[in-house]
Length: 186
Image (cartoon, rainbow, N blue to C red; front, top):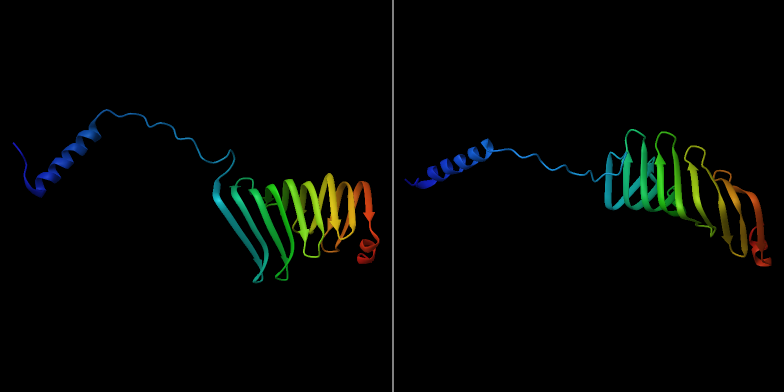
């Protein structure tokens, strides 16, 4: 006996669904989490983060991917490029292979081929750099290179105060300056 018409198709579909639902159950295969251990959220395919203060941009951060842990308050960036703005004007660019932001301590740490450039022409190269957003102080214990028009400074370790616009090399400091470089830094 065949069932004809729309009512017949609906009845037949319900019978197939009922038979499948009542049939032998199989356990679903476990699905591996696409998140790294400890991460609650992951973004990939290009991440763009902008922070503003009183309507003016302070940070423009771009990264290939990012993860976030709500428990630790830790945001991790991979292949990061960031620009810092003062009073809405670009002041510094900085990049690194990896970066993290601890939202509880307000500390940013960049690692791997860290390169910083100021709009005034200074460049900084190191392997790690820690920056405290509250104090506007940066530091590293790694070797550093600082360059600017006829001025080359190498050493180990750095403490930089961005409010006072000063820095100190902590150990093994060496300075090379051309006469033109000395004139431009008075």
